[in-house]
Length: 464
Image: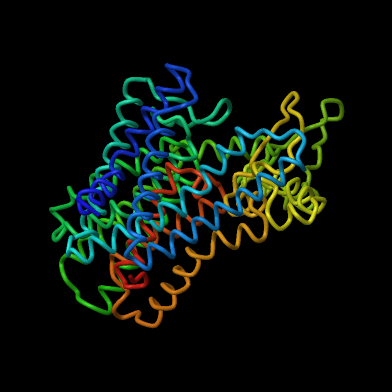
């Protein structure tokens, strides 16, 4: 391809511009009130460019041909899905179906595209890991700046409509920006670790702190949990290095910084939005926590005798349904409904999927097409057994190969880069499985695709 290097470098730099695109998307929706947003246009064009590049490379590259056949197969399965559901679902909202499947195919297309991108840069001896980590850092700084400026100026959008506290800056989708920040956070930690040789060089941790503070503004469990997981993973990894490899000042310094930041997070937890929101959620579920406080004695106003208090054994127990609601925020209810729809669906829908939001009904007050917002379930029910397994086959093949290779060569593969990129990938999977908006959201899935592809190409799992 003519100017192939320029194309792939521009494609990699597209990672930096994701937060800018998301802010422009918010402006398109809120100020211009248009559905065809900057984000939709930019990401569709990027996806189209990747597909065209694969077509061009397929003439001489065997791996590109395999990827192209994989994507063509996925397109055929989606066409079968749409043709079948057009005759089965009533009503059938074709615009919603097309919009949803555009989001679904984004991850596999971008993932194979980033594989080809990193293979090319590796072949050209470009420092692609360093570039990628730096680009993630730039994206994190843009996100942090948006959150902090919007909060200071009072122009931040609220993440919740009532009861709970949280802010999304100038980003329209709270769940998506939360996922992005959690995926990027380990890589800002990686940058800080690589640059910090002494404790007095703690300034390299500032981008991490800024992003972590911004994540606290969200008021979500994802934000708080992501920070804690990254800090714990950093400390444990540094400790393992310290005990098994080198007891250097660099390792000691980063281990101490991560420990201090963990302590700060724990101490400030009671004043964080997520702490308030957890109690607000418990209140909605009629769960009362007294933390061992002694209940004041009550007396009968007539006799003056003490009224016996209710024993702990007689208090209503917290049910499994309440725990699930606390963790999944009502997603478990949509999942149960979708499972019922799937069991009642004809064999064709079981095999090739029920499309967007399952067999939805005619919209009424509070009724309409609704995703579960748990990515793997959403993908399974929308694509069916065959479609889901086919879509996941290529990413899953590489992930399994990487895990086996990592374990078999643990002495060489247990590096800070692999650990932090691995934590980023694990967070993406965890968030996608529980809170959604990762694999089915192009703004987020592009980061997952980049993280996965870098790990696979860097360790030689993906080869031409």
